[in-house]
Length: 569
Ligand SMILES: Cc1cc2nc3c(=O)[nH]c(=O)nc-3n(C[C@H](O)[C@H](O)[C@H](O)COP(=O)(O)OP(=O)(O)OC[C@H]3O[C@@H](n4cnc5c(N)ncnc54)[C@H](O)[C@@H]3O)c2cc1C
Ligand code: SF4
Image 1 (cartoon, helix red, strand yellow):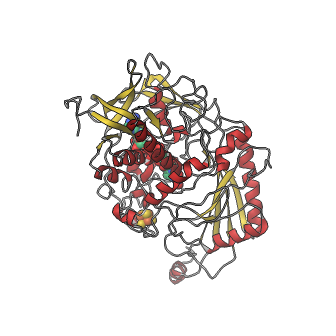
Image 2 (cartoon, rainbow, N blue to C red; image 1 turned 60 degrees about the horizontal axis):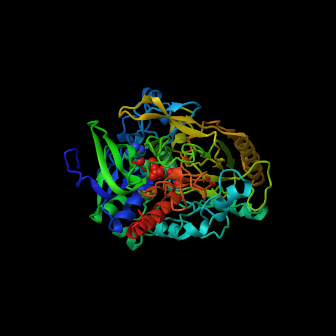
Image 3 (cartoon, rainbow, N blue to C red; image 1 turned 135 degrees about the horizontal axis):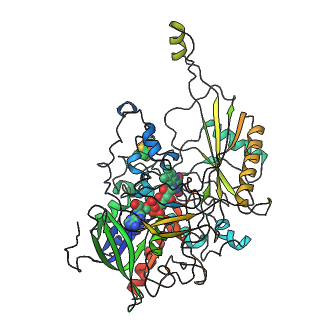
């Protein structure tokens, strides 16, 4: 490991990537592959593919608490406990509340993964491309600034990352959800197919397609070259998949980057700030605090990619002050930290279906159905702007009554009777980036490494409330018409953040006066710093965001290398 006593030369690279999660892994792979000596700095511990997945092969009965967490552990982690992923099998990949505090002016349920691979080990792997409609959102309704790019700019990069990562899906031919480079789709459940047919017959622009996911259903040479294999439907992905059946930085981009011989990974390296050289008029490196020894180091490079995940990236830029940038690196516009947005997963509708009694679900279903955005698509049809997509799932379980005693109880427990189909949907709403939704640094409070705590001021607004209402009404109506019964519509009223799709804080834009980054994800006023994670997002769309971060990272790295060759950085 590179240390304090190493010469400045040894601590100097062509490129530094901060963060080794979904976007950082891609930046590192591209830069190293293109020949740049690249250093990845990751604040958390190293997690090596296969060897550091301690629970991957455990059976439910091998866990002391049958996969659940003791009450004490839940009480000690009130925020992490709200996330479905925080259980006995994957808790070691989830940030514990006490270890990494932050200030909540308004409740913000921030779920994080601080380790090599970041949240790529934990994610649900839903991957949809954005459409031109999503990039047009701000220009159409005037909220937030216009995107500096459109679908055609990013489409080739979607193709590029999809082929390497391995994305399954159907070519559905929908304008609001462009098709990609898909491996064969997962099989949709019969009730999913039934619901899709029902929607096509009864509504315009409504579908329930099989979800597009970052799983290898049909391995290609490029996946074998990564050492990855076909997904076996184990459905234990959040523990880390020894087969590399789903895309994670650990299984895919990071080992690939390391294999080039051009990449160095330094885990346990908390990046405190970016060092700006006033004379050179550019960033020259980063200041790092070792997570374990708390010693301070400096590393140097010609270009810096910041991929610490949206909120941490924004905080890092805010903490990078100098006399040229007293309010944070590149923050001439004053927008750094502002226009934070997120997805709204508050609402769900569930029910039962008495039809198809002769069919059942078998084995692990890795993908359920996805209902692409159907509101305000080609015209403004509601009293709220933008729209929402939704998930749709259907499943069935054997019906085991616990009634009776003796022989009757035994018979009830081994009965081969099946319960009805359960159906459920959850909303995935687009929130509007606003100046009043921001994060700032609370310099009066610091963490264990002496870095100021993040202070969140983020909330829903009237537009979000109207969207929730519309989703609940619309979905209840669809479920009733489709013949589902016992329908329940609920608004969890959960705080923002729990959907784990936080975005913005250092948005892209055409005008340096109102944005932080240009169309290449390059800081307008500090050209050798690039931000290609969720901090760059100008608006949020309804699609899951990570595929877009991957495409941005690959595109931007390609541009940075070309600019370096021309001597522009
Ligand atoms: C349970 C769950 C389900 C999800 N499902 C989906 C889904 O289905 N589809 C989808 O698109 N997205 C999903 N997401 C979100 C997805 O995981 C994130 O969008 C994605 O990981 C973001 O990539 P990133 O590179 O920005 O951040 P991360 O993957 O979080 O990586 C950031 C890395 O930076 C490191 N870091 C942070 N600060 C510093 C610092 N100061 N110095 C050094 N290193 C630092 C962190 O430790 C981390 O390793 C889900 C997330 C979770 C937790
Ligand atoms: S479902 Fe596929 S990707 Fe997930 S753990 Fe199983 S084999 Fe691995």
